[in-house]
Length: 572
Image (cartoon, rainbow, N blue to C red):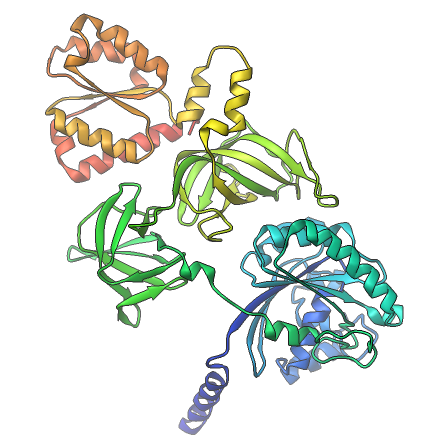
């Protein structure tokens, strides 16, 4: 490339950056039933905003997949997969970008077929607004209601009902108003903040980019005008600091940084933070990026931070504001969107991925399933593909979270089948459960019978085990604190807690209680560890020396070994 050509290209991109500088960005998605015209609408928006290259238009005009009957099939501008073009439906989420003199846009064109509900939920999850298309010849369908419900469930503040194909009903005001009333009556039960209805013809361009003379009875703005006027605010940026650690950077002995993306709030150099789960307090020493060091970073920024103190942090841990900690619990209520052909299994352990943390979890209760047509909450035995329900989950280790309505990132998760690695469900976390009012606890009281070892293991996240610690009692206390912070249910047993002849009885009581018992006895009688081993079993008995407890790196290996043992039990 010649110098003149390079300068010309560089100047083109610089002028483009100047044109878009200062304009707000709106993320919106399209949703609705099959063949409602989602891809055609986006293609029309791209075409009318001059965001399509001439060679792309020429390719569409010559395409053998053109089904519009006119010179341009606008859906071909977004449906890029061959299977999509052959079937005439959208299968995967397609992202498109365009801008106007007033705003920049990112569009997520989501599938309408019920089989691809998971793709639709993915596209809507980051949107500021959602356009639900409704075929004027068919009215509000079940899938239209499902997508409207999921849109509201995922916290999208602006909902737009675009009644498409008005050209096929002769631009009838009566048809539009009947559909608009039906849709608004349904969404009133959902409680969205803003609902806007507009009659359009994506194929003909009526009320898409400019108002149409064919609908003189409609007094509202065109769809694009409305999208340009939607206020965009980032609530997460105003929340407390949440920084999930994604990766520990350790190129040499002189540097130790923690990389990740700020989920919410603002991070400032020198600010006090708390590390979870250890609850150790420290300060931000530096905030680093590829372009250099910063004094301040905010929600959405990917940074690497160093801390004033050398503390133990790893992937999945959280740096948070000192004055406003998140909820911490291993039991949570959530709404699940089930996405897998295999139904929900209460006896199966799933992997719960929340921010950068992945931990075993089990659904312990299905409170109800939602009928997307009536929004009624009905009892159910399980959840099947595309079902939506409210459940109680128990995690192997405590989770740090905020309710979804406060923070999308800290309040959402996915469930993964550990055998197939398939994503089986998307979850939205509700408020913190209070144990005294939990329906699961009430149901436990109603059923008489002995609590089994399996139930205790499911509740604690691990089976009963014993650790024999030789050495100073203070080291055993440090081990107990580390295990407790890691989510283990522990008890520290000392010599003065019982008489020597009562050791077997005490060990049996701790084993039946299902806890991790740490024995720190001053008496060095070799019979004592053999007695404890006989009660707990060789596979659940561990011996740790004083030298291992004194070495920080060895202590970390002990924790990892215990985690591996716990996961191998199949109860966490």
